Length: 545
Image (tube, rainbow, N blue to C red; front, side, top):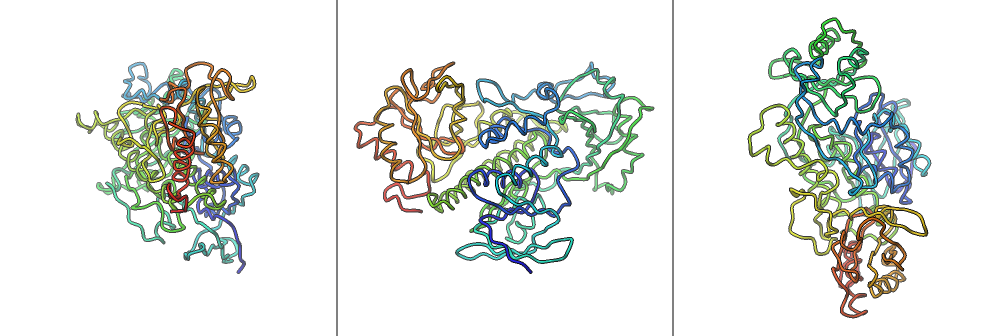
């Protein structure tokens, strides 16, 4: 038996676990990641990366590596929306079920992209190692215990049977829907449970290109598939295609009832071409379920991704939501280990991300009911546009100041720098170089103020020298540190030129003053209290909560 000491142990090596380790490494926190699989994914699962996800990779400085994996311009697939046909040969008669808004140059500096998990996981492994993290495949978590100072975990090397004791400050469970971490914590899950069973069938069929006449789409449902509804997708841009027929355990069906011959028949029938050549590459059974853990934090152990919340894949929220979990948690753990983040900041991970997890799980269910044809008018009316779900969600927690009484998801996209929302994207210029406001946020807090905000900037400079937390201040204006180049910055952020906005490392607004403070002392007092609270400290005393 050998011993390992590391700040954070990450359990699970899929997109969410690897992103957790990457973001922690970018915040100066080395990790050990253990994954029971032999290697990264060999199949192009989770192929849609949202604009917000790409913003996080951009902030981490790795978006070019991820974007380079895109095959051609995948944006056209997303613009094609969700289609329904009788057979794929009847693509000219396709009905558009959904045409979701996903991004836009006025909303984000990034665009949604298609790329298979098999490609981007390999890159994420390299990036984690580049940041000083260690990735061990064929290693599984056996057990762990917690005490006041850390977590002691027992990990097994599946090749040698050696048991390794890992001592870490924190443990992050990114080990999927059947999470062993969650099981060992004894956490319950709430929700509807399993709502359908499906089989992911990866296949090659060169004649499909001709049948589909170059039509691109996120997903296309064929109604003619024998005995089941079948969705077709190829967001990753290359072979193989993905078909996802449903099967029905309540009728006695199991995945074993779908040998290659039956899957070929389903694909041919859905295509409307009974003699089409079809090669089955792989088959993976899975469940569409809606379940959310009762808490995402228990002392020094956290859950992210499917370990914390699962929902049907409708909307493509799964891996993306998990990567957003990972980033929210990573900067907070980094703050705690550095010394400026209090325990209340770590608590805010559960408060913020569990609310988002519940809301996204419900929206996935709404889409699932609509696509499968059993949604009533109330369900249809409750559907929120994708761009709100991916970029416009709202946080509520004790570390935020002045959060309006609004739900996690609002009917309309409202990115106006209200506390608890993602800071609006505005193009800026600095020393002749173009950048987005989103590019300012990563390794500390940022105070933005307008052309008449000298008092706020001076207050930030005074507060910053106290080492409460990393804090930078920028004045935006014609003679300021930054200059907005396409639209009025202050108007976009809902303030006057004398107002100020405090933004967290994750680009979410922690506090805002619409106008100038009454006096320089008031400016310093308000900013000190807001920053202390945002770090998980008492706003009055500055002591950790």
